[in-house]
Structure formats: C-alpha cells, structure tokens
Image 1 (tube, one colour):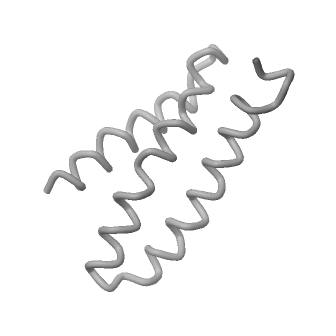
Image 2 (image 1 turned 30 degrees about the vertical axis):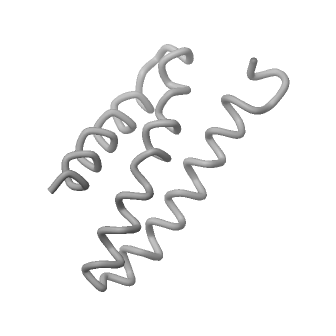
Length: 77
C-alpha cells in the first residue's frame, strides 16, 4: 500500500516536472522518477511481473541519465 502511494506521488511529480517550462524545476523530474524506481522494482518482483520489472530497469536507467545530465555534469551546476 505504501509502495503504491509512493509510486503514484513520485511518478506524477516526475511527469509534471518533466513538462515544466522552467529548467530549474524540470531538472527535478529525474530525481523524483529515480526515487520511485525501488518501489517499482519491489512491487514488480513480488507480483512476479517480470515485464514490468524489465521496464522498471529501463526507466531507472533513463532517469539516471537525467540525474547525470542535470546534476552531475560540470556545466549543469
């Protein structure tokens, strides 16, 4: 139950922030998206939903790329 709430809140926040015209807000989308990934992985594993598990890994990779682009590169700071 808590996992579903976290997935919902963080997922919606990530989607909304990813569409914000202001870069200072848009850069937070990947943080919220990545924060939801452990909950997706646990949920998919416990439900034996291996397709969702695979997609969660790909989404996690994509969100991690955003963290690297927006937060870790020298010109991003």
